Length: 123
Image (cartoon, rainbow, N blue to C red):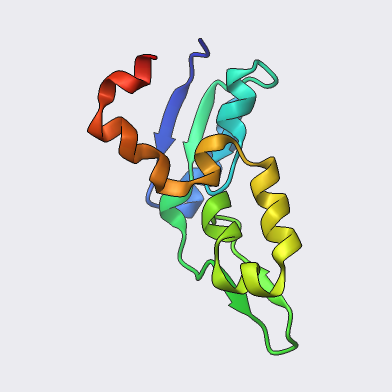
């Protein structure tokens, strides 16, 4: 069990100040695998600072020169299954899924069995 504090702010500046003023604080958001790293004791965190709610841009944006911009707040499954990524960059889509934990590969679909039958959480 890894004990940590959880912090969520509505302001970018407050979020940055929280991490700067808290030893061993880490940002968590998007496709982060920080929870997996904590679970397997590969890293520690005294505080997790949630930045998911600060997202204000599109997940994938096609730029005028034909390249794409991927928002850092995007979750692995959202990014991998985005139509632009699947169509134009199928290898990137597969690589994201290959590196994702099981719940990320299926996006919100993994929650359905648990909400229908909570006993499965303990099996």
